[in-house]
Length: 84
Image (cartoon, rainbow, N blue to C red; front, top):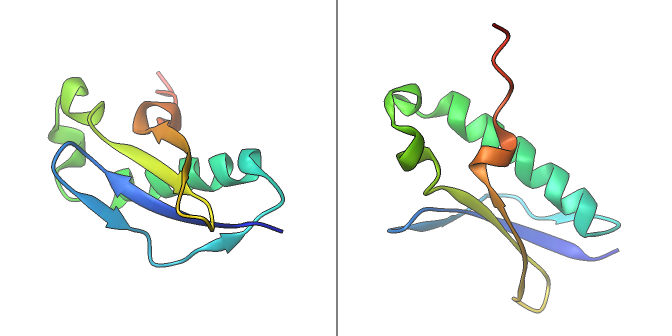
């Protein structure tokens, strides 16, 4: 199984998620990236006060063992629907 690393990025910084994962394919890695984005947006103080434009600056990059970016998942993809 391929090993994937994850990076939370905006226009200024790129921060490596502390864990890498062995996953069957890129779709599995995309699902992990969505969960990372959801956890990040819940954990960061003031996240809900940022504008939609500011939210759209954030992505999770998925990098394979060769160091190549295989997919970029926008935080917008990870937004949970508003229950109202």
